Every structure is written in C-alpha cells, then in structure tokens.
Image (cartoon, rainbow, N blue to C red; front, side):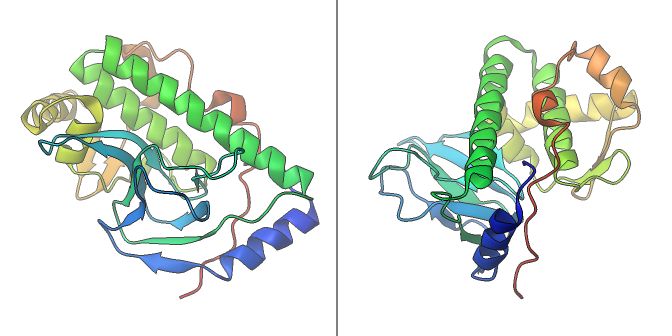
Length: 231
C-alpha cells in the first residue's frame, strides 16, 4: 500500500514466486500457536476469527488481497486469533524488510489500516443498528477492494455468506437476511450470487452517516504491487 523502490518491488516479486495455494476453510494461522512466518495474501479472501467453546464464533476482520497476516515487531509472536481461508487463496511468505525502509513503511501503513478497521468494527458492534452494521461493513470492504483495484464501477465480488456476515456483526443470519431484503427493496444495494452492487454510494454513505471512511487516510497512496501468483 505504499510507493516502493525497485529493491522492495523485487523482494515482493521474489516472495510471490514462492506462493502456494490454501483451500477454503483451511487455517492459515491458529490462535495460541507460534507464528512461524508472516504471510502476504495474493488472491482470495480470509478472515481473523475466534471460536468459543460452545461453537459460537466472532469474525474480527477480513483479510483481502494485498493484506498481511501475522507481522509483529516483537520476537516469538503468538497468534491472537485464527486466520481461516474463506475462499481458495494464494499466499506467500512476507519479504524481510530489515534493509528495505520503503517496504517497512508499507508494512507500517498496512498495520495502521488494520488498526483503523478494528476501531471501525468496535464502533459497529457497540453503537450501530443492524442495518447500519451491514451497510457500513459492505462500504468498508468496497473501499478496501477499491484500493486493491478489485472493484468494477460500483460492483465487487462478495464471497461472504449471510451466516458469515452475521457472525461478523453480532447478528443472526435471519436478521441479516431481513435487513438485506429491505435494502434491496429500497434500492440501496443488489446482492446476488456472490456479487454486490451499490447503485448510489454517496447516498448510501449519507444514509448511515458515514461521513469519514476507514481507508481515507490511505486512499491517496498507490497500492503495494503484488506479483501474479504461480499456477
């Protein structure tokens, strides 16, 4: 997510050449276990999740292409949540930034965006209505995907099920379905077959009082280049 010098770009290309696939529903990192190597997500969607003893789960945040998983600045880090692949994904080891200040800056910016998304999630769960939670999350994901160049017009791939959306927002899947149907009827969104279209994004932001965006501080920066993954 930052403007990188040539050495940093080469480091990413070399790391991407070592990419490997992980199937949907497989764990990329496991809560409580040591993180052997931080990862860079090249393709697909993943999520940070906590599962309670009775099977209830809370999705904490979603990991999108170009996002980093498990990058800490202290020694011997342990995963504070499980990272699970929601779709088939492609990942690679995160390049070492020790002698690459531009790359280290990009990692710092990525960490700051993670923090901003976490703050937004806390506010959603603590103060928003069900409708506001759903629409705010969808807009945030739209904005993040826009940074990665993965939006066409006002449409984007949305592989989350209503059950996953519910478990991210402290709702039931029945409640999510009811709110989505309501938003469809009044033309706020179109959610069909894993694709979402937002016909009037400015009006939708205004309707839920989203006057500032989670990703706005980073929107002027070019996306961090990621090499095409190996087949």
